[in-house]
Every structure is written in structure tokens, then in C-alpha cells.
Image (cartoon, rainbow, N blue to C red; front, top):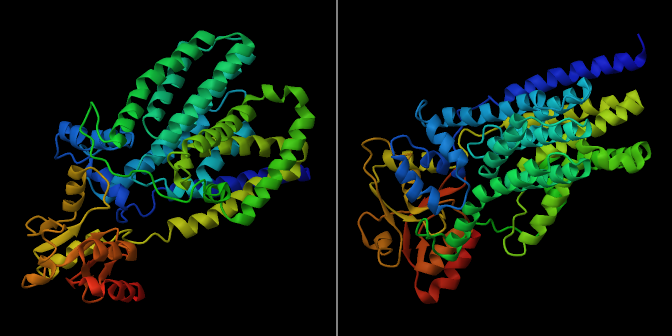
Length: 502
């Protein structure tokens, strides 16, 4: 047996084992507690609430796209709204993205290239880490994978001078519309894919009407939501009375793309190695295809999705900073298509390069061990905080909810989720009129802060002059409970310094 064949067989076996293990890891530890955003997903999908209430009082008052919440609402009518079943819903979507990678990959792809893409999708540590996250990430990755591969299939028909079927066009446009309503970045990735398909349609003079008018229809069906969001952020909407505060995450403007790449692909040294591989592959592809490189749709399409997405974000971030690492998950399938193409091309030139794939998967396996198997039982402290209140027979608390920017009705359901039936607990919104309950009542009414931090405690001190009279009880590092005393004006600076030391 030739050495090249031994390398290929061994690499395929190793990749298969690692890919299967990471595929199954999506279903590990589904019973862990909820993160804050996941709690919002639960609140907007409670089967005990009429959908009209969820739609008008929650989803229409929020800026996030609603598709995941609607599907999750349907899921919760068949399964209990618990962390386990909620995580299972997302994990199934994440697993379907891997399956879609194998089923929808263009028929023109060689079997080995298709295999590379599937094991990269399966073995991606970040897709595993977010695979069971009870937000729209798994759904958007599934849909982005689907419409990107369907776009490549359509372009294959153009190249082969055959007509794409109506079913193929409808599948591409349908998954694109669903993707556009799952995540804003997924919407951007779809419309970039549609633009590339249109350019190829013009080049090959086939399918121009389907490409142009189909994309236009999807855009018209989708643009109503961004218009609604803009109205919300300005303070009102024709669809719902907007009472939104700030929604966009406040991160350093134009955060380093290096940080985002490391988030998606792994260790800094690993990313540096992949960049060197990409440079070598770019040179090799250039010499191999020369001017024909632009006809290699499986390289040009995902590359355009990555580059144009970043260009759009650079413009939009002049108003709203969107350089948040996890927002880029819907573009990861495009990056993996690029990697699969690079690895296949390099191993076709020199068989030794096939070792790149199991090497990458081995690093991702190690990262998967760190991120998936070390999940804490509780991500946030709300559950523990409510159990503490119940155990100590505390029936009234002052809730500081200024920084909880989800719609009020959703916040109400989020806060009541961890209350046991029969637990007597009055959550009093903390304000200037009732803050004196923190020191004038007997016993003192404690102050509860969700997503607690030193900054928020200092904010309460400066805004309401309520200084902790003892060290706060912290739950999972993000929820705190403390009793307070009146902070006199001449003691403000001294009190703030003392709290900062704590």
C-alpha cells in the first residue's frame, strides 16, 4: 500500500472518530442552568401564555428577530419548558446543520471534499459550545449552511448549462427568508449569497429573473422588521409602543478582528497557523486557476460572504457597534466551506497536506473538552438567589431593574420563572420613592440586583444613595443581594471608595 493511501485512510479514520465524538458532544450536559439571554428565550416561549401576549407584549417590543422564539414556542407545547428540553431543541438544530452539510453539498464536490466539510462542521468546537445554547445561533447556522450550499448548487447548474429546478430556487429563497428572520448576520450572509448568485447568473446568462425577483421578494418580506426595529429604537412604532432602552452591546468600537477569528477558530497560535496555510493555498490556487479563479464559486461565494459582511459591519458600526464575537457564528459555515476547499486543494497537490484536517480537529477536540465538559451547573445566580430567599423566608425585595433592557412583560416572566409555586415573594421595583425601605423597614428589605457587578452597585449608590451596610451575598458571580443604609451626601465619595475596595 502506498504511503499516500495510508495517510489518507488514517486521516479519514481519525477525522471520523473525532467528528462523531464532537457531534455527540452537542447533547452533553443539557441539564445545565440557563444564561440570562436563554431565560429570555424561555420567557418568550412559555406555553402557558397566549401567543398574542408573547407577540404583542414581548417580541414586538424587542429588537431581536423572532423566528427562533416562535419555533421554540411550538416546541414547548410538546415538551416541558425546562433547561434540558430547551437545550435539546437547540442541540437538534445544531446537529441538523451538520447533516445538512452532507446532504446539500454540491454534487460536483468530490467525496473527500464533502467529507472534509462535514467533519469540520461536526468538529468545530465553537459550534459544539453554542450548539445547545437556547438562542438563535444553532438555527441561524443551520439555515446559513443550507442556503449557502443551495446557492453553490444553483451556480453549478449555471456552469453546466442546465436549468436549476423550481424546487431548488424555492429551497434557496425559502431558507434564505427563514435565515433572515433568525439573525441579522444570517440575513446579511444570505443577501450577499443572493448577490453572488445574481452575478453568476448574469455571467452565465441563466436564471437572472429568478435570482433578481426572488431576492427582491425575500427582501420585501424581511425589511419590515428592520424598519420596525428602527422605530423602536427611536422611541415608538406603528406595530407596538416602543419603550426600548439601549440594545446594542457596548464593546470597544471596531473590536479587533483577530479576537473574533480566535473565538471562531481556536487558539491564537492555531489561528496563526491556519492563516499561513491560507496564504499558501491562495498562492497555489492562483497559479492553478489564474484568471479562472473567479469561476470557482466554492471559493468566491464564501469569500465574498466573509469580506462583504465585514465591510457592511464597518459601515453600520459607525452608528451601532456590532463587532461581537458570537454574532459571527452564522458566517462560520462559509469559513468552513473555504477551509474544506483549501484542504482539499492542498492535499490534491501534495498528499501530506491531508494531515492538516485531523490536526485541526484534534486541537478543536481539546478546546471542546475545555468548553463543553467544564460547563458550570448554573451559569447565572438567579435560581440560587430565589432559593436563598425562600430558605430565609424573605418575602419582599427591592429589585434594581434599570439595566434589564428586555421588554417589561418578558422581564416579569423571567423573574417569576425561578419562583416555586406557593413561594411568597414581592418584587418591588427599586426607585427614589421606595429606596428608604432598604433601611427604614423592620426587617430591612434587601436590594436584589440581576447581572450584578461593582459598577451596578456603585450606580445604585450614586443614583439612590443606598450604600451596602455589609458585603453583598453573591450568587454565581452575577446576582447579588444586600441590605443597605442611607448614604449621606458628604459620605458619597468615601462610601464609593469603600465599596470599590470590596
